[in-house]
Length: 472
Image (cartoon, rainbow, N blue to C red; front, side):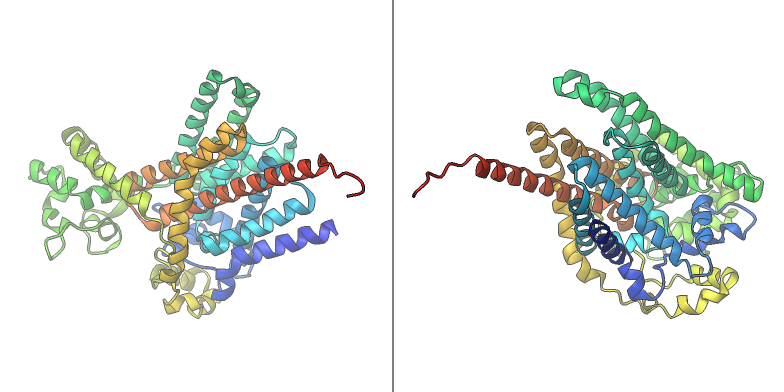
């Protein structure tokens, strides 16, 4: 019976996480999908496309249109939710199976999690790495060697597949170190601090392994020991959008050492508005490509960026704050999923022509996924869940249930840190923040379950100690 319950829970949870792809008739794709699986077929690292994720999904193609890749992504999510139930709620057996299945289905209905788990993009691995990091620093002591190794591998996989995830995990590691130090001030923190150095070391090991796998894989495939290129160009795109780049060129041009001086006017659209980040980075008529493209223009754009920080610190601070607050509030689902994805289509035609027909006839190509309707649920649930995090942290701290309190605090720091990293270093987009929002809702589900368990224990205790006079 226990095995049947577990299998049923796993099946329902996995079906919920793969539902968008099942409806679509093909794994959900994005503009960047082709750039990832093309890594094994091209002769240089891709701009902003981490090679390890390309290896991950291409290795799980298996002649099955990448379905094994999204199945593995879904299983990773399920295993982490299950481990959270075991570690934070001390659930076992049928109760743990029910919690895992019911919570996963709830998340699929109330958040955008399934649109990321069923998608050929590393976005789902960022929140999974965050959750794995929490389980390492605050998990159960009974976890065996293989369990610890699996969580370290999950942290490493997240770090390997996106530079932004590396920055987020590094920030969470530093925040955890500060939390361990601060715990010295509280008598109740003594037990949690025990062995904290080793647990922090495991997170650090996963982070280092994941980060180093990028240059190692680039060397193995292309003979170039380097990290994913394009970070300086991504950052400069935001400077174009914020007007800092045009201000710098106005003050420093003409300058024969700055090629972009010849294209000052092209940082504006025809209607006189500043060119957007996306327009500067991806439109082939952009001045970026006129000065040599991503690789050749990188050193010049990096120079302008750092000199502009020196010359206009207040402009940078104001732009950074605006981008951070904007990113914190952009949590809509389906960002870019209703678009044509012509680049990914071209990549399928080049490297997986056997899958092109299925890709072309997927329902996603019709561009009619009703994300506006989905967001009538996803957005209020996301904001409500995020708003509850500090309340959960404080409430459970005073109840003496530190693990639930620390989960809420950890997820809140992750959401704030992610908004700062993605908003400031790239450009605000809904998918950057919405991919993590299910962690907030998951935390609320854990808190609600904990309260329900406490109430059940109280009722059972009262019933066991009640007295009924005989004969009445």
